[in-house]
Image 1 (cartoon, rainbow, N blue to C red):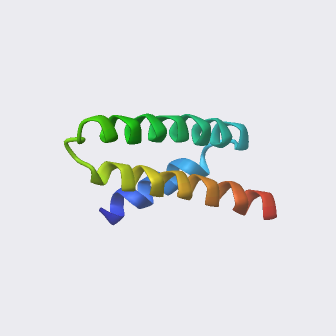
Image 2: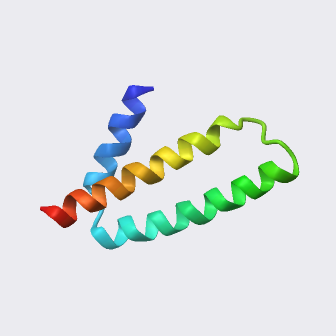
Image 3: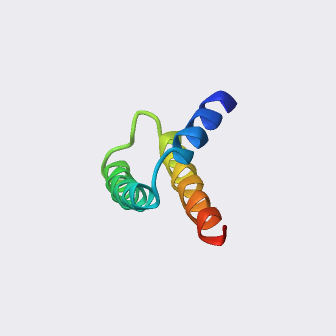
Length: 69
């Protein structure tokens, strides 16, 4: 699991600020749809919602880090 996180963070480093902002918007929309689908009928893996939220937080953290740099 930690290797996936490290790989995800490295992929974020290679993305531009505009790409990161677009990715956050896409992922937030996808998360909203996932939550809605889960409310109607349970997802096969409900932990995916938590993982998705954490990925969005990682992207936002990278954006904030670049903003402060």
